[in-house]
Amino acid sequence: MSVLLHLDQISLAYETPEGLQQAVGNFSLELEKGHIGCLLGASGCGKTTVLRAIAGFEPLRKGEIRLGETLLSSVGFQVEPEHRQVGMMFQDYALFPHLTVEKNIAFGLRRQDKSRSAKRVSELLELVGLQGTAQRYPHELSGGQQQRVALARALAPEPELLLLDEPFSNLDIDTRERLAFEVREILKQTGHTALLVTHNQAEAFAIADRIGVMRQGAIVQWDTPYGLHTKPADTFVADFIRREALVAQRAQAYLRGEAS
Ligand SMILES: Nc1ncnc2c1ncn2[C@@H]1O[C@H](COP(=O)(O)OP(=O)(O)OP(=O)(O)O)[C@@H](O)[C@H]1O
Image (cartoon, rainbow, N blue to C red; front, side):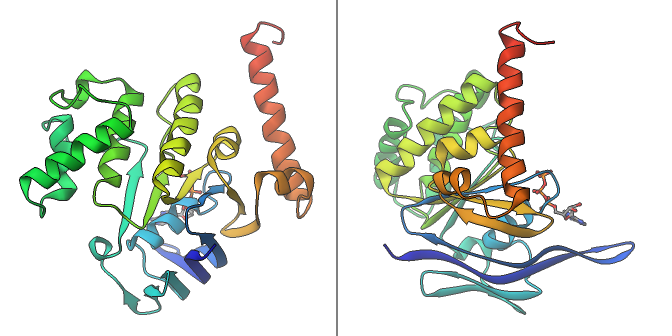
């Protein structure tokens, strides 16, 4: 398989009142076409910063970002976000409340003629299992349904790469796990390449082909879920994976009334 997304030794920093603070340093990964990658790590480790750089919202201090053969970002160079062929889906749904489901999905298709756009919208509604909701407004849908509309909207212009930033974090535990599996099925069915950000290990393992464990702006291990479990690169990754599994077990025991 060919590599679609190349992040080559990228570094990013923010201007703060205390001076320039590095958020991500010498960060590299390659994501193959058709794969779902996931950046996993504690709050503040730089996951969203990496995603924003790929989307074109943050300038690079070092390194390069390429999509296939196309250079998207390097030092002093940025392709505008709207010209990147990159779709985005974020945790707060970001649907337009005053537009129907149909119009929300068609928003990214404004340059297409009406009949093509209508056909694409109905294909997408079927893909995300929301036939019959075209004329509803976002507030008339559940959180999980709204996220499926957001997915349909992000896929509408047929982006080469889809970025998902904590897409399920506003949902209850059952819905988020179910939706993570559903989104994986949908992306695999359409052959899309996607990079997801989460701090939830169950979600990462439910959806991803490759997981990148991050710590303080660096990627510690970029591997398959199986590889992370069986061959953690260092004690940080091993502890991180073990601790998260322990928390999940404790939470389940607590819910069953077996633990305090
Ligand atoms: N606009 C900003 N200005 C200054 N510092 C920022 C800005 N955005 C993020 N940071 C800092 O950069 C670092 C990485 O932040 P980032 O949001 O990428 O982390 P994250 O892993 O996505 O966290 P979370 O899981 O909490 O969303 C943090 O130390 C954060 O405080």
